[in-house]
Length: 329
Ligand SMILES: C/C(=C\COP(=O)(O)OP(=O)(O)O)CCC[C@H](C)CCC[C@H](C)CCCC(C)C
Ligand SMILES: O=C(O)C1=CC(=O)c2ccccc2C1=O
Image (tube, rainbow, N blue to C red; front, side, top):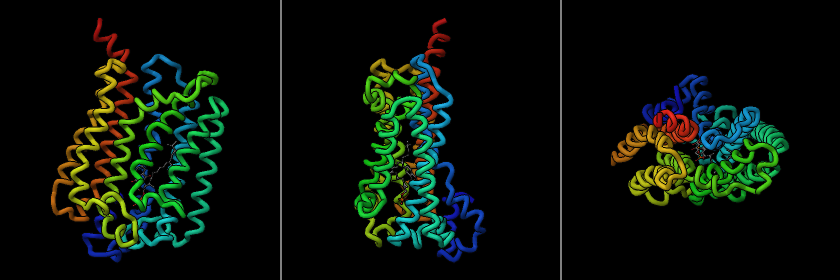
């Protein structure tokens, strides 16, 4: 059973008791939420696609190390999120699949989170050693934003600032780190490729921020009750839902502009394969009732849009020269 079904069963069956009756295996699968790690791997996949399309070298060893490190760092973010949200009580009733709720061992979950952080940073240090020290600085910056989002005493996500932090982390900062990581040592001596990182990462990071934005819809009551003033709590469910089409349009506009400017090949429009889940998401949120058992799926439709959009863009950038040459024959 996936996370949305686990959470929906809680609403459908009228309470935590129903979710507790679910097998722990299903709850654990929801806790692991492996599809969510598409957001962690996207910056480096986009960097790899862009480098291939530019005819620049690609270092598979660096790509693999960066992927593993990014997954470990996002695992830290999520485990620590369950710990910090357990401390405020915001997950007590709304998140039966919180690892702290499942294990009852807050301190051990925090130790596991910190282990993921240390291992992820150690791998990133290895990537930096073989490329540029700036990679580690940028990744530390991303982790700092991740802590500001949820960690005491900041908890900026409780002030509704999660989406901008998310965009900065997964957009320019992580993309710049990935571009430097995949470049031969010394190529990054010219400093941080902010221009390329902004053009390449901005659109996909808006899609990533949309995932976070949609993760609030089914938690409005719990969040409000615990002082977590997410954008959906601040705006109300209906007005927040009206912003979703603008998230999608902004993400696509930021990705189509480089094509119109001639910086990217037409194949970069492949990101449009993410449109079907985006349309389904807008339809779901257009339902004025926003019943929790249905609205919980919005985060996963947003995640499908983020993943297909990013993979389509990365593939389109990588294949551009070959397909253009093929068409020219
Ligand atoms: C943990 C995040 C969102 C979940 O928060 P919430 O409490 O609303 O969710 P639950 O309902 O499940 O409790 C993600 C927040 C993202 C953060 C702003 C930035 C994280 C940056 C990463 C740590 C950096 C990863 C490495 C990089 C190189 C890809
Ligand atoms: O559990 C969640 O709701 C999220 C976890 C996560 O790691 C993430 C990362 C980037 C954007 C959104 C999210 C989540 O919503």
